[in-house]
Amino acid sequence: MATMAQHKAAQHISNKDLLAGESDPLTDRPVHLLHLDSVGKHYGNVIALRDVTMAVDNGRVTCVLGDNGAGKSTLIKIIAGLHQHDEGTFTIMGEERKLSSPREALDAGIAAVYQDLAVVSLMPIWRNFFLGSELTTGVGPFRRMDVNRMKEITKKELAQMGIDLRDVEQPIGQLSGGERQCVAIARAVYFGAKVLILDEPTAALGVKQSGVVLRYILQARDRGLGVIFITHNPHHAYPVGDRFLLLKRGRSIGYYDKKDITLEELTAQMAGGAELAELAHELEQLGGHTQALKEVKAEAAAVTAEAPSSERDLSTRP
Image 1: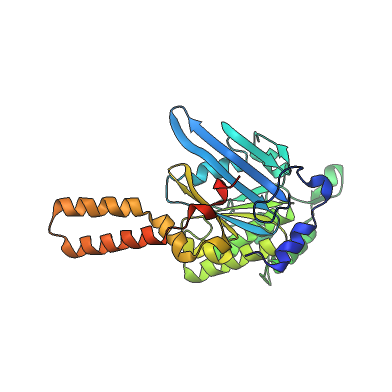
Image 2 (image 1 turned 60 degrees about the vertical axis):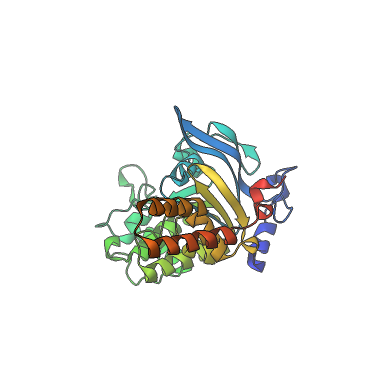
């Protein structure tokens, strides 16, 4: 459910930026930063993505969930400008677009933070923060990097994200996985991101560090960014998410607001009753696995019972 801070962030959008005739399906206010309507992508005869609808708004976290091969990476690449969609429409602040490069996406305020983070482990934190966009001072042959200013900005931006570093000279490789994620997020925010895409930021982290990253996601949301959180773990998505898009084999199997789905129902959707029923059938054919068969059948029945109603699915609404 949206918080008061989220509503305030949404109200700061100027009228000229709003898309006439299009509104948020949850609030009936036209506040979409991004909107994908029936978007699809295919590579030759291979359908990577089909009929996906979702929206991203200021101060809200949209979680995209699915197992490997569900289409999450393809969706990221379309939004981040790496690939162009073949079907449907993709609008940014009301303007229909087909992004041709990541640079064009950055210019539109869309930044992606990938799992590898694109950091140089042996370089200082401040060098990684400004990597490729270094600040300079002086002119002509006397032009040089403005080291002091970059250090000051790095320390300030990280402090605003909740990391208080005494020394930004230390190699970024000495930070924990969660702290490196924070540096990447703070860097994207500083360079003008309005939409932040996080690609499986908790995938390779332990429980404690995953909690740190989830806190940074909430901080980015509270600063008014629209966040797209890609994950396969509903237990990480549910505490921070406002909307949930579930993908399976390139198709949307559900698009829900948080108030319309519980964690148990979200987990059940991810588990997939059809897959469990198929496993039960295979065990039955093999024979000799009575206890395992009983457990799988019970789980399949529970998944089917907990599956949320299609009436709550935002993608099915007119």
